Image (tube, rainbow, N blue to C red; front, side):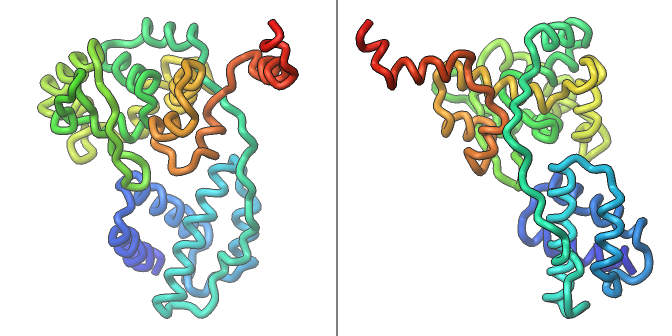
Length: 273
């Protein structure tokens, strides 16, 4: 029963134009619930659901994402008439994690580049220099590279089906085009619709770095360096493909000495100097 219910729910999500990556995430969450809860999804009680989620050792953001999937699934079930009450409404609200930017240190980034091959280095650089997510990197195709006034632009297939254009300059431009030519159009050819999976792309990068450092922390690096270089927070948010600037604040580490400079300005010390 779960399989049929999940398939029908997925059609609704596809109609809402969720990205392939988001669809995969939502499906995985519900398949995990199906394996743990069993039985009839429309007979699942709030108590059973709470008991299962409470036993999981999830990070806060993972828990927030899973809860969102569960709420979506049972709300759809109520609207479709499969059940009268959603057990997921009993799930507690999990506050977002406090801002904790974690940009990859330059020494770790440089060491990873030295340890990898050409494909690895291109993956690392697309995250560290263009702030691309692993799913966006996996989908790089030559048709997404178009000429611009200076260099070219790369269309990133962003989270939630929100594409964005990123400036692509030399020498990165030439390396992307060379990889696409060698891969028959895809920069990273593979078995998922012609390209590597997002998970595989992430694993290729993570194996080159110490535990805890990933493509995601390279995105933090990209945002932090852009902000430190004078790019406004709103522009950094657009650069990283965030819907909310509040999300960007969790990625960007303020420049060292920023609080001191603020006090100097507000107290008139710089003006007096």
